[in-house]
Image (cartoon, rainbow, N blue to C red; front, side):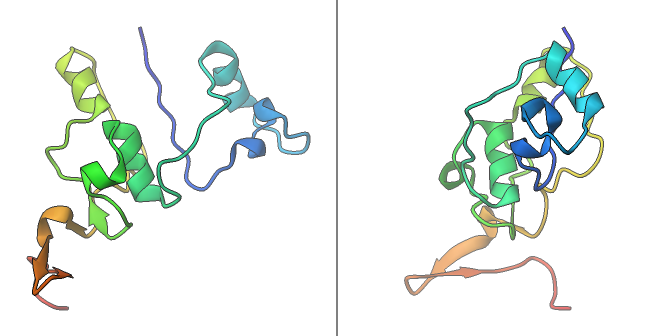
Length: 125
């Protein structure tokens, strides 16, 4: 079985003709949707893109995987469905941007005198 997982950035479902948009023509996505699985009642875990992508890949909420803002990276060793597919013998690939590794991870956020502070392993500038 082949699996094609498409994530677009900042695209609402009602901006696809297969989801009922009478103006925008999306024939290629419509063809994929006609032969695949379309989820009609879905919700995001976080309205910000990086936390939500990390949730989709890990199946965990932002509070569990640590990506709660766009300035936090998903831990490089996080268990994702892509890793599980690869471990099961699938050939996996990413085309485009993942926008998962950007900035500091939650491992670089620590408490100092009761307040959360961030420290970066990189020099200023």
